[in-house]
Image (cartoon, rainbow, N blue to C red; front, side, top):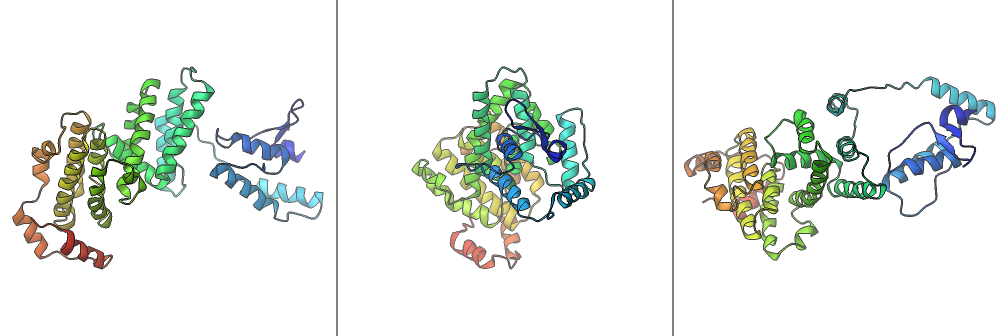
Length: 345
């Protein structure tokens, strides 16, 4: 009775429980085994989330809920009567995202990767023409993207990835804008391929010593010293342009571009403390020009009016540097950076 009421009814043919709760493709099979056998499957090579499901089951299984059937039943009734579930029905994916943002603002931690994945996969499967094999392959590709970035970096990656393809939007409007980039099955496929192409680039921009740089052309080795500076001062605004340039500039031009952006960042962000809002808007414009091949060399960026408007001249830079105050955090590293690495001219 308890099984049928809380877990699911047993299929008379397969003698397995059809669980009331349906999980996603990654965890559904594992969860059904737990519901049928009331023990986690003992398999090798399980995913991290399935391991967590099994660990959760073992945790509660180890707790004492009563010494006989009556006490156990009373315990289950007491717990279940105190549980409240809220069901939210939305009209479309955009409203789903708004609900997600509202809940997130109230400390209900929902997964941005899962939300975007559900939308992309719903578009891909819209016409029911994709095979299970192809869908599983897409699922694996998505898992690989998330594993490279981690959920904490995923939203920023999506924003930077968006901002070299489309006009800059606020974080609140990001999901609505991404929908326009992937509103047909063909565009959704292309969008997923693009995420796969750029995920390792973004992850390696965050980590100057990532092994990925070692597998690239030897010319790219010199970017590490610039990325170390970005990391030291927590500067990420150039990433939109650098992501676009990696697949659209030659290796030599990419290295030149990161050097130009590095010098600008030290002058603009670190010493002069100018607002990053204007900078982000300018980088968005330049990144789109790189992505569309309107600009194909680093000099095109450096000599553009957009870049020149941002670049603090020598007088402004030296005046700001004279009265520059350094916070105590990482001050030793930053002093070393200033005097041993920073080119003032």
